Image (cartoon, rainbow, N blue to C red; front, side, top):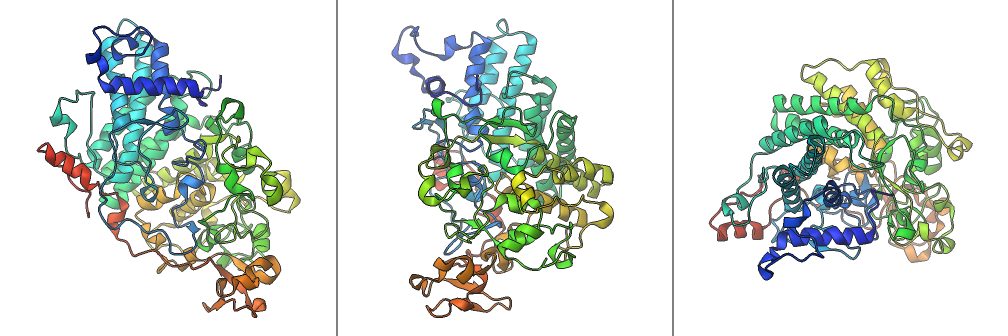
Length: 624
């Protein structure tokens, strides 16, 4: 059974179940109906608990999401960061408190999946919504108080651990978006307004509670509960992600080194659970993200299965072939972060033409991930002309635009390549970064053996035949004795941590990482073009040769390039030969100036007013 790939009929059943549990419909009947789920009769078997839990899966194990929905999806869900540029003015950070920032309502989408309000792209997290917290608390309460004679102690402990995992995971997301949030420790009646309208708790206290939940999870969750369903290893992988996030946040934002050490050590310990030989980096990049089946892939700690015969498909691959447009798309700032094939930064590399940023040269001289991530030719459906192909197989991008539309797995919302939900490559990066950060807080220094077990495992990823045929080679191993001396390094970042961050940026391109990373490092200023101008540029282009359509008469006054000295040249209909330089996306302009308050989302005025209407106070986010 393809357990993570929930069949529509099943989802509708427990979508309706959840609605019934919270609608309070019992007043309408003297006795419960025998042909429907209800709270009084539901908690009678372990299978019913398992069914209840499955509703969490599409919310928290997203992969490529489903159909046209892109919240939290790989690639399209993470197109707001310093890695990308778009046409026109760059998307701004929020500047005013919104009217509304959430909802208490649950709805079924067109696929029958119960959904909460959509996430916030600019904060890489959820809206002000606690329905999933309440669902987890209800589950824990029912197991503890109604199933003592139904479940064995082992079963009870496991399913409580599952409930506490999803509760903690949702709090990680909420805290990453809002900072301080109300903490609901247990299930409660909606009549208890003192609890329902409680104010925010400081984020450190919330995350201490999350820490305790995660500890319980690792002590009590099953090591194996079936194929590709939540287990201790999957939980440990997510724990390594979020404990790294919060540990570095506490260090760089709050200066709370005690909490930073606590969370970072937990990130290391959680990752260690997975570093036993069970998982490996044994497939090329495109085999990982473009495969029709990830069954048996040793890097995938968890994956999401897509199957057209089960009406479970997505649209992400469509945006990685010559079908859909990419706006935003990769910028020059990201490209300059790729190391050269000798393992050095471009400014200090001995590789021929290391300082050249045209596409053909980049494919030959850079980290092999560059070749794996991007199309071989400039493509005007990408805002920067650099078109991402990371999230599809090798074949899709080679099919001409006038032919690809006939192939469902590459077009529309009928794509069927499986998605990594969380993978070993990220866990290795979480582990090494947490160890490096701990070393700055009095912990043991990172050793070469640590680097060999993490970054060098990633650098040893196999190349596929396509890359080998192009002459692409693996990067040399990282050595502590010969770290690159990057002239672009921030003065406040140690050399080793800078290189770990670089590795993370490259390996996790367009995965759930970059915006969250620069937020936790307190580096949101990377997204301001005034101080980081390369985020507004594309790579070096020779438009008359590489993309003649960009110097068609219809592009007069539209196409622009920038020379090495900063001079901007506009195509005037007669100067095609001069259109050689860094490509500037159409009408590109910097985003509005933003401040530190943009690290966290404001709460909507409606949410604050709702509290006030009941005589309570909901505090606004700091700075708003």
